[in-house]
Image (cartoon, rainbow, N blue to C red; front, top):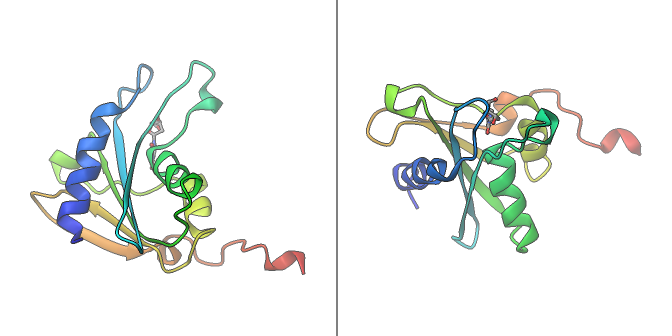
Length: 133
Ligand code: THU
């Protein structure tokens, strides 16, 4: 699947965002090696720490359904139509890189400029767990 299509799916996924506090919608679409797509949105909580970002919602859906080979994650937000890129927060970066340093992040706007980079570009010198050994 090309980046434009994946980003369109992320843009649609943001319609389901539950955002009574920030009113900032985020949608994500995870593409797996076996060509499956899992979507997610941000889900807020009155106790703010309970909020879950769109990226982790989508990723956790993929993993919990047995798809661990993640190729790409497209991210869209309330700002996409303004041609602004939306990058994953620090917590999501760490969770994404858990499943592969070469996972691609796709953002921007499907009807505008589309940007792609690797998660390792966004999180250099990350904590990998190899430190345990
Ligand atoms: N948010 C995401 O869903 N993903 C990001 O990459 C950045 C932030 C959400 C969390 C919260 O619901 C709202 O955006 C404002 O921080």
